Image (cartoon, rainbow, N blue to C red; front, side, top):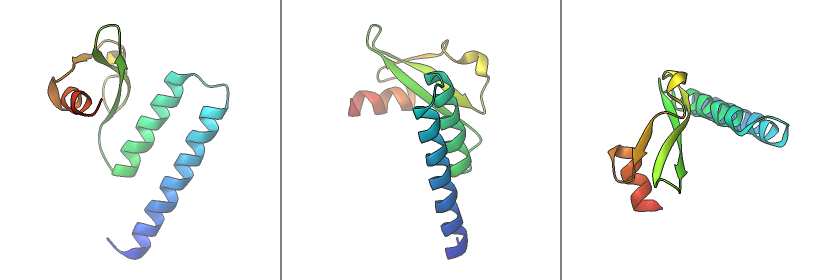
Length: 95
């Protein structure tokens, strides 16, 4: 990666973080904020898919809370047990 491209990527990330800060400070819902965050991360990492899972203490599971690149109808329906899959394993080890 050239220095110019790396610099542009860094500037784009800073602009996106500023946009997320404005969303968080505004009257937007957490769902909208998470969706925008997933889109930003996917764009910054040049990834086809980015998903955000939130921990549900009552069930000890991770719940798909936002996604970019997957079926948005799956949000709130996909649940991952602690220790299951990559996300469940990472959460179990680092929670």
